[in-house]
Image (cartoon, rainbow over all chains, first blue to last red; front, top):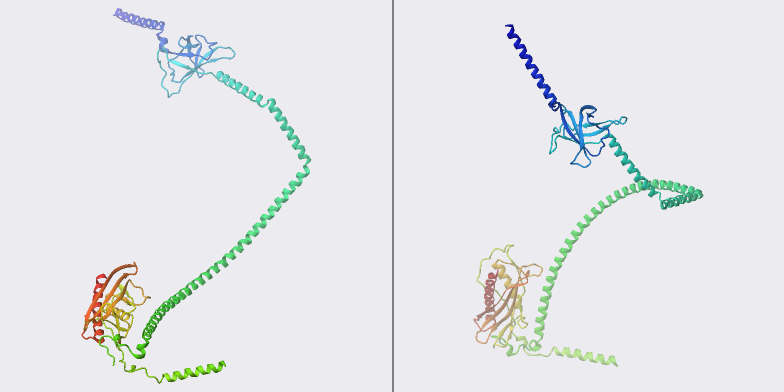
Length: 314
Length: 205
């Protein structure tokens, strides 16, 4: 019974040793590293890698998240160095992340600083023929300062060139001439100081007169306005009287017109009657003339041949 | 000298006038007196019609004109076709043209359907102008006949348009060969011509 108990203990120990040996083999083969880290490639084209070595830290926001696993000149890009950064696998690098060289100004030791992409972006993955995901090259603060200083220097140079152009000999002569003219003008003004005083006094007097004239005009306008109001009132009354007079005139004209019309009609009738009477008088004269046209018939009576049918002389 | 001659001439003229009153020129005082005849419209008596309404056309009737020979108060006769003579003792009370116009107005007013105007001061729509062309006693035969020829023109005054023109002629035989019969036949001729005239105007209205 005691012998069977030892066998179980020995078997358990043997299995534990086998498990430990298996773990050791895996660790030695580097599989553990693959599980704990993740490699990224950074192509540096503009920045110097002075002070950077294998094992140099890889940081994010100043915290070490990995190390430099190796570097070499890239064949696909001109004067570019590809650096393999081994980063903690727990760190999620998003698309849009950049990396730059951060160098200690005193010791000159360099490290790689990764600025992660926005969390809204997807996780950075391997693309194309690359072996690992590629982090884009960024720009360090010193580089930014250097670029700014360079631009300032360039702008300063341009400013100096423009100043040189402004201060050319021709402009200097023109400026000297202007200054001379100003000097002459100031001298003349100084000489005419009394005249200017007189002129200013005249201007002041004119302004006073203008002010007085304005007041007078304002008063005159008021008087004219009151006069116009009176005139308008009188005109209104006159127009009303004129309207009344015109209406009366129109009525009188109508009466006169009617009278004239009646007179005309009466005159026409009288003329017609007179014409009829004249015609009757004319007929009477004609008849008398016809009687007198034969004096013999008046004195001795008509001749026998003149008698009409059935007429006989006694 | 001149005064003596003037007095002598005046005395001679006065004596001539006085002596002239004593001279007899014949028996003219026995000449028959003239008889005046009235020209009438001898038409059948008709009942008077009501006066014309305002919508009836107004007609201005001018005085009837005549030739100068017929424009006399003496009755005219003709013993041959180309001669005319005047009755010596027979006269119309009015000249035939003027009298005929009066009879024409009276007939139109009596007939109705017209607003007849005679004066020029009254506006009218139509104008009736008539001319008495012939009006005499044709005495070529015994007792003869009265011949009346009337020319009439109807004119639209507003449009100055001649609406119609016509000549009316009537011949009425006489009962006797004298002036009285001629006057009576003349009145009958006037009545017949007015009959024809009013009938013609009715067709144009």
